[in-house]
Amino acid sequence: MARFYAVFATDKPDMREVRERVRPNHRTYLRSAAQHGVFVRLGGPTLAPQCDAMNGTLLVVEADDLDAVMQFVGNDPYMKEGLFARVEVRPWDWSLGNPERRV
Image 1: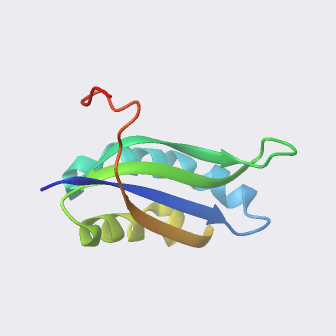
Image 2: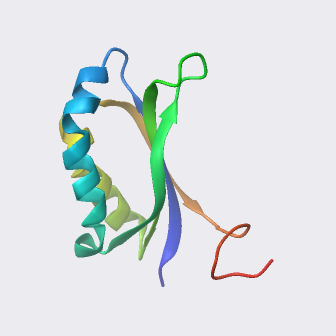
Image 3: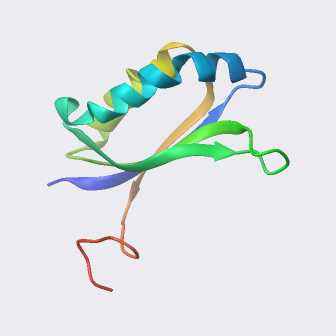
């Protein structure tokens, strides 16, 4: 049974050039997630509070299990380019705002 997972990734310092260069490939990869058994339900960059510069990634994905999510994240172009200092994946229960649930 599929469930939701929240993916929190924080960029290494001074990686703006890498993020900008790899971003088109990253976005294409996210759009192809279904081919990997993972469905990206929402996502976008996190921002630095002082200047709104991109400093990480937040995704909510749907998959059958954590292993599928970890494999998907591991093959992300950002991950392969070494952009992230830290990545955390947590099972998540999407309740408020979920268009498939009435709360």
